[in-house]
Amino acid sequence: MRENTGKVVLVGAGPGDTGLLTLKGEKYIKQADCLVYDRLSSPQLLSMAKAGCELIYVGKENHKHVMKQDAINELLYEKSKCHELVVRLKGGDPYVFGRGGEEALYLVERNVDVEVVPGVSSSVAALAAAGIPITHRGIAKGFQVITAHSRKDEEADIDYSLLTDETITCVFLMGLAHVKSIAAGLIKAGRRADTPVAVISNGTLAAQRKCIGTLADIGGKIEKAKLTSPAIIVVGDVVSLNDRLGFFEKRPLFGRKITVPYIEAMPEKMEAENDGRKSENSKELKKSNNNIKTNELITGLQQLGADVTPVKTGIIKPIIIPGFADKVRSADWILFTSKNGVKSFFYNLDLAGADIRLIANARFAVVGKATEKELAKHHIKAELIPEEQTGKGLADAMKLCMPYAYGVSDEDTFDLGKNSTLDLSNDNISDKMCKVCIFSAKEASPDLEAGLKGICELEKIDAYVNEQAYDSIPESIGNSISEAVFTSASNVDRFFGMLSENTYVETAYSIGEKTTAALEQYNVGKILQADDSSYEALVNKISN
Image 1 (cartoon, helix red, strand yellow):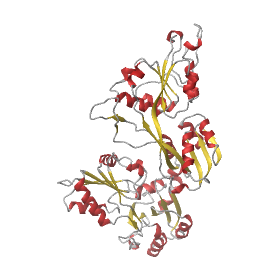
Image 2 (tube, rainbow, N blue to C red; image 1 turned 120 degrees about the horizontal axis):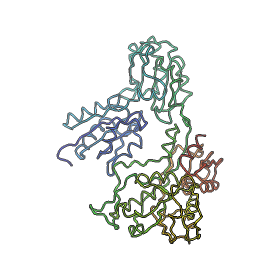
Image 3 (cartoon, rainbow, N blue to C red; image 1 turned 45 degrees about the vertical axis):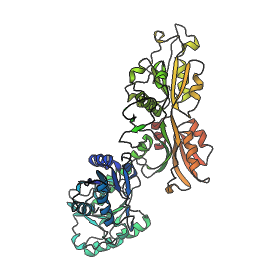
Image 4 (spheres, one colour; image 1 turned 135 degrees about the vertical axis):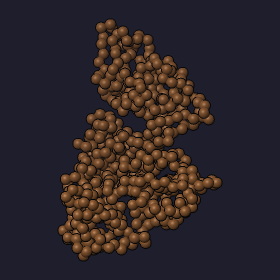
C-alpha cells in the first residue's frame, strides 16, 4: 500500500474503432499500472497495457452490471493507494453520459490527483460512419444529445417539448429498447411523422448495421432489423444524406464475416535482459512496452471493411541459439524463410552482445516479399528473392549460386528473376564450397534444406518455435463458417482441431499449395488459393 495516492486518469476510449483512440489516451494506457475497463473497451486497447499491468473488468451493460457505480468509484480510490498510475478506460468520452464526472468528483473529494483525457464520442463518430453528418448547412444548424437511459436502468423521463426544432438533429444514446416510445413522444410533441430516423448499431465497427425509417414507421422496422446494442438513434433531416455519404459502408469487404485463424507473431521489438548483462546463456526475454500483437492480414481485411473474427491457434517464440556468433561469423549465405526468422536472428545477435559487423561478409536470401521487408528494417537488403516464394523455390534459386557443385564455365550467366539484386557475373562467383545457414522454424518444411543438401556446407538453425495456443473458439463462430482464411498447413490442422467434427467452412482461402492440401482433408466447400504466397495476394483473392 502506498503512503500517498497515485494518479487516476479517465481516458475516453472512443466509439469502438481502435484507430479513433487519441494519442494521449494511448500513452496513458501503455503507462498504466492498473487498467479499469468496461464492456465497450476493445481487446486491442487492452493489449496495449504493459506486462504486469493489473486489468480489472467492471462490465457495464444495459441491465447487467458486474459492479455498481458506487463500487467502481470506491475501487478507483482503493487502487490509487496501490498504484502510481490508474487508468479508467471508458467508451466514447468520459463526460458524455459516461458518468465520468461522478468518478472524478468522488476521487477529488478524497484528494486523489485526477486527469481526464477526452475521447471521440459515438454521438458524432457513429453518425459519420453511417454517412450522417450531425450538422449540415441548410439542413441542421445544431444538435442535441440526449440519454434515453435513466440512472435506475429504466427509460429516461424526456421532455420532448424541448426537442421540436426541425433544424436541430436529435441524438439519443442508450435507447435501443425505447425506439418506439421515443418516436411516439416526438410526434406527440409536434415533430413531423415523416421526419427521417436512423438507428445505428455498433457504430464505427465492421459489424456496424443501421436501420433507416421515419418517426411513423421506425418502431416496426427496428423490430424486424433485430439490431443489437450499443446503438444510437438519430432524428432529423440529415439522415436523408446517408446513402450519398456512407463511405464507411461502401468499402469492398463491408458486411462480410471472415474468420482468420492466426499465429501470434513475435513483438516488433525484443530486447535480451539479464540484470543488465547480455550473454548467450541468458533466458530472459524483455518485450517492448508496445506489445500489441499486430497481424498484417487481419489489419488488411479490416481496413477493407471485413468483420473479422480472429482465432489464435499458436504463438511464435524465439529460440536462444547456443554458439550463435560462431555459427554466423563464417557464413557465406544467411537464409530466412519468414519474418519471424529475421526477428529471432537479430534478437540472438543482441543477446550475443554483437552487432552487424559480425555478419559483414555474408549475403542474404529470403523466401518472399514480407521477409524482405522485415530484413530491410535492419538496413540489410536481400540479394536473392526467388520468383517462386517457397522453400523449394529458394533452394532452386540458391543452386545457381553454387558453382562448386555444377562446374560453371567462364561463359555461363544466370537469371535469378526480377526480384534478385545479386550480381552473378563470373568475377563474383567463388569456386569454394559455400557455408549456408538457414534460420527457420523448428518445425519448418524440409524442402529448402533438402534442396541444398550436398551442394554446400549447410546448417539448418532452429530460430523460433510455433507453440500451440489453447484459446477457446469464439461462440459467434458456431458450426457453420461462411469464409475463413488460412496461412499455413499447421494453422489449418490446429484450427479444425479446435472445432466440433461437424463444423463446415463454406469458402476457405489458402496462401499456397501445402495449405490447400491440408484444407482438402477437412469439411470445406470451396478452396480458393492465392496467386502467390503473400498476404497481399491473399487479400486480393478475397476481395475479388
